[in-house]
Amino acid sequence: MNMHMKDFTEIALELPREVDREVAGDIEKESVFVSPMIDRIIVNSDGKTARLVTRPGADLQVATDKALRFLAVMVRQVSGFEIKVFVDTKRKDTGPYQIGVNDGLVERGWMHDYGKGQVAYSGPVLKLAQLINEKSGQLYHAAFNAIDGHYPAMIDADTLHKCGYFDSHPNAVTFVGNVVEDFDAIEEFRLANSCSEGALMPKQEHIHHDGMCLNPAACFPCYPTLTGQKFVEGQCYTWLGRVFRYESRNINGLDRLYEFNVRELVFVGDEDYVRSCRAKALPIVEELASFIDIDCQVQTATDPFFATVSAAKKFWQAAQEVKNEIKIPALGNDGSQKMLACGSINLHGNFFGKRFDFTCANGEPAQTGCVGLGIERWVLAAFTQHGFEPARWPEAVRNRIFS
Ligand code: ATP
Ligand code: ZN
Ligand code: MG
Image: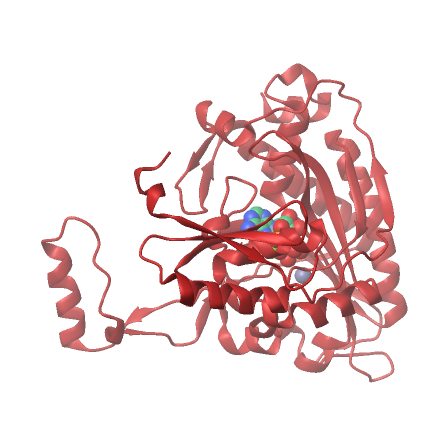
């Protein structure tokens, strides 16, 4: 146990309303964003009480008040919607699920974990990531005649604002900062670092934010490029996007990174076209899962929106069935089985068509939808289900990644 643990204090709390495991999970995940004084909030298995873990030096009264305000909002989430399963593939490999995949990949020298939600990888990990990206790209070309593209890793705050991101996930944004264009400020920063042991950041007042952010959702940079276009027939676009989400202390190996890669597919057209694309995406996920030989499901889902908007947005999403999630069984750090969200299939209605001004055949704002596959999570799930022994992997994959 960490020496400083004794300074962490646990406070028992009663929840304003009983919650199920799904809401409890969202509370725990979002709790790292409640206060710098709060380490996390853990909901007990009764669903009625919780443990507030505060960090060293916390003002317990202030921390508790804030935790209770957060909980009051979070417990209002509606859950328990019927989960519909659209795809359910079963693997042929009969070996056990592999525990400790992240550590195992590091031990084999196939992955380097920088410790802040970033990883480097090579060898079989790199080859598998490339294979999943390539294979899904090929399937998208064949099924949708998708156009290839490339988009920047940074995104303008105005674009994010238009996409509604500050409204739904304000906690996950990363702003890019620069030293202010000031001779003295630049010199002060240079001098301070010329004799320091570690990096010293510029003074707060010497950093300015000119509205650049790191892109937090693969499909966003595509929409500004569509402005002014009329989609008489539908069109699909696909690319490998780099995505950044500030996950705070929730970062965890390949499962929850700050910086990760997403194979994205965006469809644009009228409602029939977009719905038919979503339907066509399901057998593609099935084919990809069979190719890698993994257990995999596609089912209805909702997003864990940040606290204050959570209840309303979640309800809307669940009621409209606009989000399907690709769930692949894997193991938690304690070895228990959990469903890893490895991709989502979303319908956006005409939200982006309206905001970015692009239309379909009848002149109305076009509808859009997207499919995002989290490459690193697919890699983690595949190594969990086949382990490190090449013989257990399907031949086509084995020949590519272990050669
Ligand atoms: P979660 O509930 O696990 O945070 P999410 O609902 O935020 O996932 P989406 O917004 O649907 O995820 O993002 C699309 C895909 O990107 C996810 O299905 C997942 O595969 C991947 N992904 C999301 N966040 C991360 C992360 N922090 N690290 C690695 N992959 C991620
Ligand atoms: Zn998307
Ligand atoms: Mg998330």
